Image (cartoon, rainbow, N blue to C red; front, side, top):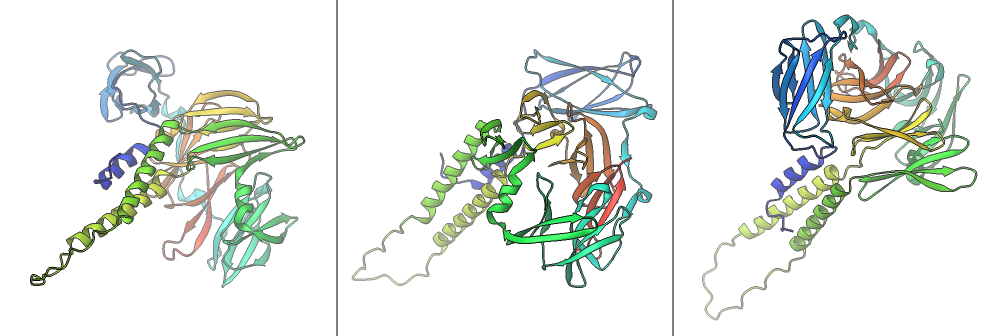
Length: 455
């Protein structure tokens, strides 16, 4: 290992390598495909884009392109058909050519890219004096929110039309509302957490507990029924996640799944060791002793501060390097588990796969995923309140886009754009609506709830 003489270039190299979900294949391959309509008729003169390379189909609907990076985004456009977009993966066994077939649908049958108009966007709780801190969707389309109103803080329940049903005054400056795997709602502060309940138009708040320990325990539980509890733990600088199923009756534990990439973890550890060694050498070096005094001292010179400045510059570089390592390289890996329909599904973005389990914890099957390679991926999956649909979030220049994913194969079914507001927060989906918080453009300290149609 070097002593990190050129720390910035090293940071950039490692940043480029670690910020991807998996190491992209750097092998050039030819992609040959045929573009047809739903009846199998070839489509000529369709514009094909594979990564950064452009091509067009001939009279037989054939195109040829190539890419040196996989997965590669394939987009096909034609004036008479809906735009086609997909990811081309590098097969495990291939010689020199990857064959694909693209079936384009007429625009009237398009799996629509939905752009919601202003008339389909609603201000859920249009009370200008109330700053909504957080909210949660409840059954029957009710909403529970915590807000500040005229310097007081409240928990309020709203009906489906946004009318206030009940409220309770609370301590100042809550952080958020949190719903655990048992569907219990908690009011979270920086130092404590309160269990709450909203029943029959009334709100109850119970005795506070210290936040440390309790909240972390609640967050690690992802599923619970009367027979099994599933929880996760992180290890290896939060780069390895382990899901375990606990039998509630016998208290026995078994491992369901371990998600990690060992090569990446080893690189991170080596980089961390190098960083620590370099800092030790910098801050624990003993300065050389001053030269012995001479009987005929020379005239005093102005002290040369270049050595001190050099040490200071190195110290700044080491500090930057440390923050880069701690805040960017060792972010917890995103391998979430969701309850969807009658299954539990783990989405392993490090290894491009989703693993399906029964609710009893038995592994059923797996399938490949690649939606996380589309540009703007925000490392966030969202399920609806009914736990039947799954959405991936993307962002470009503040605008949010959702891809509705088929939970059985991970493929995109439609794309939904949120074009009314930039940087929406706390997205939640129920029925045919998506709800979110938005900060007022004139006063960023004020947040309001909006909802919009998904259809």
